[in-house]
Structure formats: structure tokens, C-alpha cells
Image (cartoon, rainbow, N blue to C red):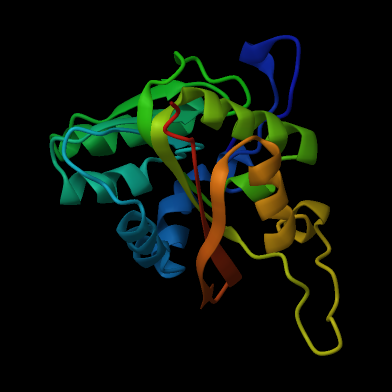
Length: 220
């Protein structure tokens, strides 16, 4: 997960995958029990992936989405970015065990250590809702910067729509409540991305989730 802004990027705080660093060993078992692998597959189905594309995941955690990508496209040119060194170590070990050429680097979505126009696809899975509004805006602007003309961003995230009748009750977490589809779509458009759309939704035992896509114009 991507952290909050700070003057010292190496010491910038971030939210670990399970909320607390000591819970990290539970992240992969929790993901399996929650059916996140199936949701990752649905995200990849929507991403229009082709041979030869460069693919970036922001907030890659322990690497499960890119491992799923590697199962489909073993030679994919894929990079995962995350601020958590412990999660990155796990991701690298898993990729090495499967002999996949996936790379993982330390970094923050709001300040990607990557050149302009360098990726065809950016993926994000259950990460954006962890960001405060200003940091989410920075992260999405960075996505627009590193995407090549004609490139696409594909996201799956918690749907913060209040549950229940009569509008329901707002989530106790302000950041989850801020993950309402209308606000996510507005954030994508506000970052200058084009073709912004919600392109699917679903339900898991942890709640509702939604898929989004956006892109960068092909230019003149």
C-alpha cells in the first residue's frame, strides 16, 4: 500500500498490507480465503493485455496480482512498486520460485521512480482506498505521467457505497467511505485521465468491490 506524503521519501509512513507489520504473514492466507485470486483474474480479463506490453502495478504488496499475470503471460515485462520492504521480499521470493521475470522495486505511488511514458498498462488492486484524498490525486497524476499515449489504468477497489435501505449507514472508515464509485470516477477524471468508466462490480465476503478503467489519449 502506498504511504502518506513526506519530506523524506525513505521514511514516509505507509499502511502495511494487513494494517500492522507483524500481521504480514497472514496476508496471503487471508487473500486466498477471501477469494482475491478470482477478483485478480477478473481485473486481468479487463486489462486488454497483449504480448510486448510493459505493465506496472502500484501497491503490489506481496505480489499476488503480478503472479497471476505471470501465470497467463510467463514472459510479461512486469514491475511491481510498493513501499513495504518486507512485502517486496515475499513477492521476490514467490516470483523466483516460479521462475518468473517479474521485478519489484521500492517506491510510492505518489512519487513513482519511473520515467514518463514508460508503461502500456498500470494495475491497482485494493490499494487506492487506503490513500488520503490528496495522496490519491498525486498517485493518479503519476499514473497518467508514466502511461504511454494510448495506455490504460485498470483498478479494482472496495466500493464504499453505504449499505442498507434508505441510503444505509456510512462506513466507519472515512477512506472506505471515500471509495464511493462517484468519488473514484471524479478522482480519475480530475487527474487528467480519459475514457473514465466503472466497468464492473461484485461482492465478496468482505463487502462490495468495483472495477474501473481510464486511459491516456493517443495524442496527435
